Length: 64
Image 1 (tube, rainbow, N blue to C red):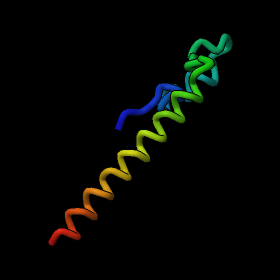
Image 2: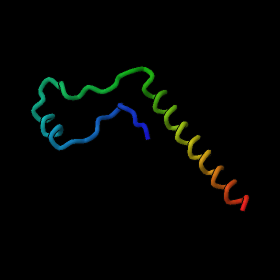
Image 3: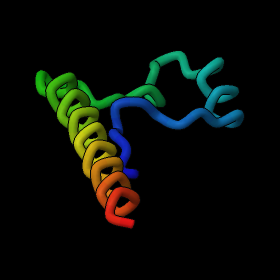
């Protein structure tokens, strides 16, 4: 599954480095006006894939 780069994955070493990161250079996140739109689009695509897979499974089982 493709994930968004909105949030960084957690890491112990990065967490420790953030405690001494005075200038906040480690926290650079995607900051775009379309971030919510992209996330919502990804969510609906996942829902569509789930529906497609469920319908295909139903058709396959009902044809037996």
